[in-house]
Length: 382
Image (cartoon, rainbow, N blue to C red; front, side, top):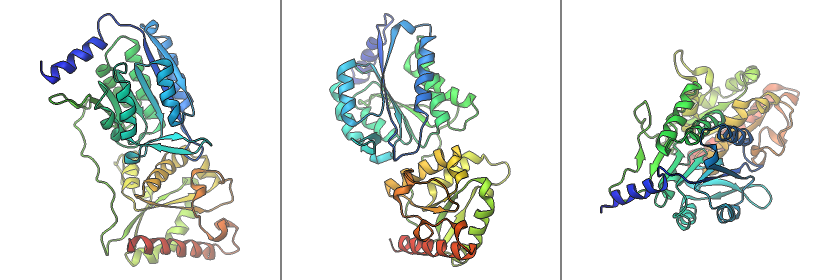
């Protein structure tokens, strides 16, 4: 019997017409030094969906929150799950983000996860990694597990939650994993979110087997290039993240950046540059991924903004941690920014004195631009 037929037989046996109880292990981690996620909402919506499902008696949902690496192996030993669902942050090649002993971020890479899942390969049928850029870990784990789902780029809270709800609604109705995956993608699309191509379904990678489930409804988009340092003489791409309620301050900063722009040292971008008819969310994400430097204009309104704080800032910090972009927080107005994910970074202006607290606004912004110029020169040398 060929290896592909062997795999088909294994999967058919695990998802037979006489199903037994399936235990789902929900693992969540949102360290205090990372962007806030609505993991509680995701867990609640999955629970409610399974409770009302046609096949609800066939599923048992176990949860482990604020998960540390050792908590994973303990939970797998304690509950013997068939389906594992991770909800949290991902950092691409660096790994998935769990918590350390004091609640800060601790990365676990795909190789380590693959070795752990290999030990439980006789019982686990499916793994869902509902975190940004988790396709890397999914490919590693796919050596040992029949089905695994990862994300090929950043995914927002709403899209991640919609996918999870659609996926488990389908399983609860007695459908198989491939159908559940497609319904999860469709659920994202139904919400009007342009992220339905982000989830990727992989099958156990044995010789002759299908490794990637085609994405539904649309052709697969090309994989975005890995950000690299700009070539000598090329301007550094600068992404400006700000609240629209602080547009006047953003415009003043733009004026002070004019000399760096004219000298071809930087190429600043902000969302007002989006052309009519362009899908704004997709454009923002693309610019955020290609930027070499990301400026965060910190004000009370920035911190209160779900899009600025939970999406743009979160992804900016992930790229900073991965070494693919330099993040510079600029304290524009007095606000409670201590103990935020970016508070560990050196901020501007000097002594973290808010721009609007200086006696002269131009003097404050000059101090900011001088700090940006130093960072630009440093990046250009590298």
